[in-house]
Length: 242
Image (tube, rainbow, N blue to C red; front, side):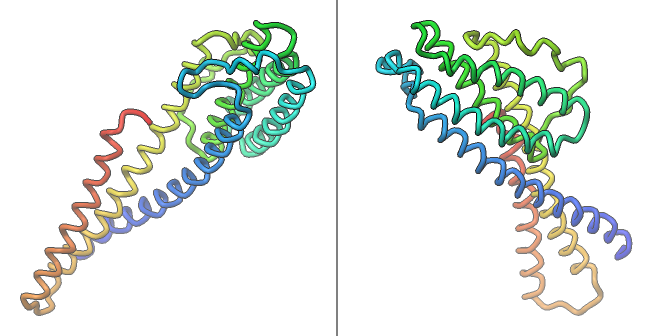
């Protein structure tokens, strides 16, 4: 029995260590994710409550838009270079290259944001699309990329309509897929930790060492802690989105 319980114990330990590493990666990705969101908000182009463009933005000069475009270009260059360097497969690399091409187009539109009223609208949308895509790239860079078929990767990168809600819905869908990968890691991390405690408790309970009442109380408490840790994973299972 002792030998029989040690195999699942070591398996649970391996899963727990991997889950801890994934959780650390998720934390690092979220730091970058939040930083990108703060940089986007710092431009102060839209009202976050109504999601409309502030009136003074329509009067921005060409120099102001070019300054914004320069900041965007520097940011996406840094993030995408890191993503390309750490790309794990050809499909991911192809997708990143396509996004870089589209971001080049977006930066050009941002730089020309002062040309007309419609140009300002498109510039703001292109800017938002770029930062949302960079946030997604930060999550995928940390390893939270859902598996996809090569047929899902479009080759028509230059046809992105930044004024279409569909392109933003697509990013939200990809972000939810990345989140689902973290949910899986979160689930098996806590289940594995809980199983380690439960199995260790079972091994201790089955040992031939003489036990007193205090030992049984300690074993009962340890078992309950292990079960609670397992049930914490239900928090992730019940979370449909973020």
